[in-house]
Picture 1 (cartoon, one colour):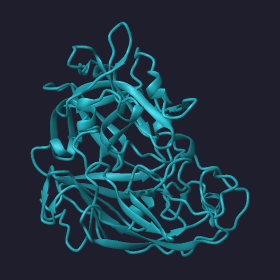
Picture 2: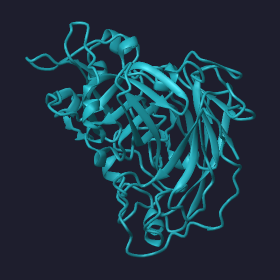
Picture 3: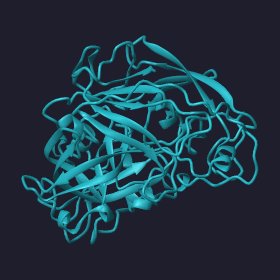
Length: 424
């Protein structure tokens, strides 16, 4: 089963509680040097800021234009979060102009209106209709693809296997992520290694892993539905005419004390233009089912459970030696900043590995010192209860070029799926 949307630190953890005391010094405030950002028609400006609510941290976003297919009825939407841990374009209904509610709805094989439930590792879910839209990002155009409209008006109530985890007894209620404030942006563009969000599992099983995905919703109520891959919510970059084999995220290095905002770049394609070459990047193959690789941290091996995830706003991993924050619940707050390391190992028969050093500082102290800052390269917290793995969230991306090569697509390093990264 493919990994669902990550978003380990969604909603509740996005708001940084301000500390009432200092401590936990993070190090130098001297800005590190970074090369110029890539430019060209295949580059979409990327910004890391506090999001539309001005309450978040480490929220990377781009601007996307969606249109009613084949028409000039369009809307350009900013603050669409960039998520390498999920697949597909999802727009929050409250961010849409009235005219865009005419986006045609997708239907199941039985002809019923199609809805989708996206669940997150942070025990949350987004429920909404599946629509068809033309999508534009940078110079790339994807025509008439399936997207999700989260929280659209007059939608049916989310089914029980969407709003709750039926794998637990009693079922664990999940938190709704239905508004701009919930999501942290006006939408979400999922650009994982996969071409569609569920894949073969949803083509043959209505409720994979006992948590719903797609539904047909006639007047009598919503019922889980199988959906062929071509009709599922698609990775929009994979549907472009060119530069469609992957993406690169480029973010400059920032100081150990953080930054108010950070300007970066989302580059369409991998090894397709002079501005998206892999060069000497470390190539880490991923498992074709989960999209994950293996991470080894302090003697613990997370087999096929490590992942690069721009949609998580910190490093998330288990380490009982790190002190929990007093104010910023769900984060680590060591008394002084610590330098740690972990090794990423390619999945399958790949022997490629890469050891990565990273820093963890006290989020309480950082946010207390600079309450207006929204970007940090050294924050992290424990994985949610019941979740095992190592989440290389957005802090990993600062000071690096990170590539995501899509499944079945060709690059100079071979076919995807794989991820790659190189320090500046």
